[in-house]
Structures are given as structure tokens and as C-alpha cells.
Length: 133
Image (tube, rainbow, N blue to C red; front, side, top):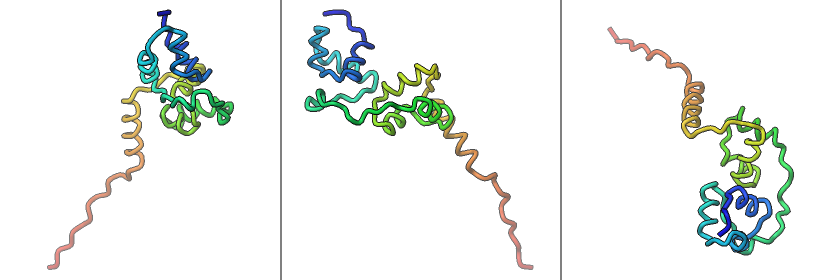
């Protein structure tokens, strides 16, 4: 088995759209090894009929817009991938190319709490109770 470089595997699968079978042939490994790498990088596994179809939907992305939406609008990598119809790996590559630090899951929870605090009006005093005399 040749040395298995994960970046090469991802490039062959995502960018060159090779099938699992072809990638396994190149590296001399079992397809489960390749599947594990793809799952680790959250890349959806294509069915066999999709592997060799040209992807006519891929258009150049406005990378600055992706970076802005991630940094300023706090959109998650997964949501960006869904919005742009691409893989999480591709969004990760764009953010990495622009040297954007990746957020942790705890950052999203902290951001949601801050948003909720900003949206909720300050607590009004309880209504005065009038007693009939």
C-alpha cells in the first residue's frame, strides 16, 4: 500500500471526482479506508452513478462573500456548504486560504446566547396590583 495522504485522497474525490474504486486502486487500499477519511472530513459519499458525471452546477464562488458570511454573519461551515451546494471540505479550503480561524462548537453556543440576550427586551417591572378599598 502506497503512503495514504489524506489531502491527496480528498483532492481526488472532491476536485477530480474520482470514484472510491479508482482511488483505492491508486493507493492499493480497501474502500473502507477511503470512506473513513471522507467521513472524518464530513464529505458526503457519492453513489456509483454520480462519480463520473460532470458537475455542471459548480461555478466559481465569491470567496470574499463566503468569508464575510462566516466571519461577520456567523454562518456555520455546514450551512455555507449547503447554501453554495458544495462540500464542507471546499468551504474549509476557502476559509483556510483566506487565513480565517475556525470556530469551535462552543463559539456557536456563546454566539446564540449573546444573540438571545440582545433580542430579549430588558425585564420590565411587574405590573402594580391595585387593591379595592
